[in-house]
Image 1 (cartoon, helix red, strand yellow):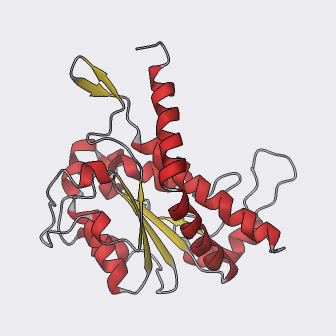
Image 2 (image 1 turned 90 degrees about the vertical axis):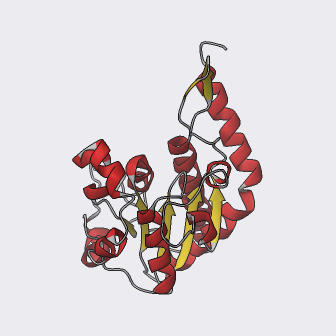
Amino acid sequence: MSALSYIEEAQKLINQISITQYDKIIETSKLFVDKIKNKKIIHIFGTGHSHMISEELFDRAGGLANINAMLDDTVTIASGATKGSKLERLSGLAEILWDHYDIEPDDLMIIISNSGRNSVPVQMALKAREEGLKLIVITSLNHAKSCQSRDSSGKKLYELGDIVLDNCVPSGDSLLDFNGKKSGPGSTIAGITILNSIVAEALKTLTEEGFDLPILGSQNVDGTDNDDLYKKYKARIKHL
C-alpha cells in the first residue's frame, strides 16, 4: 500500500463510474435540462452522511439555482449521530419531512443512500412515486444487493428509481483494508462526482442551445449578484 493509497483507489473509483455510469449520467442530464428550461425544481434528499452529497449542489458557486436540498437535521448527524441513525429507520418520518417542502409532480427528485435499506429514504422514494415525480437514485448496488431492507415494504431504494446510478462503492463504503479493518469511504466522493457530472452535461447542452444558464456566482468574487436568481426560485426553495 502506497502513501497515497486513498487517492489511487478514489481515482480507480471515478474511472469505474465514468465507464459504467456514462449512459445514465447523460440520461439524467437530459432531465436536468428539461427542469431548468421549464423552471421546475430539482429536489435532493439524503440521510446521514448522504446529506452531504445533496448539500454539494445547493446554493454554491457554480451551482444551479433551481436546486432544493432537503436538509432536515432530524436525519443527519447534526442533531446527534446515533439519534439520526435511529431516526432514518423510523417508518412514517419521510412523509412528515416531505410535507415541509414545496414539491410538485413536474419537479425532479433525487434520493441518495449508500445502502438504500432504511425506511426514510425508501419511504421518501415511495412518496415521490406516489406523487408522480421522476425519481433518480444514487446508491451502491454492491451493498444494496447484499443486505435486507429495513422498511416494512420490503423494498430497497434501488428498486424504486426511474434511473438508478451505481456509485460503484464496495459494501461497507470502504476502499481500503488495514489488516481486516475497513476504511477510506468512497460514497461521498462518488456521489458528488456523479451529480457534478450530471450538472456539467446539462449545462453543456443548454449552452449549445443558447439557453440562459441559471448558475450562481461566487459571493466572494467582487461584483457577483445572484439576487435575480434568488428572487426567481426563493418561493419554492425552503433553505434559501
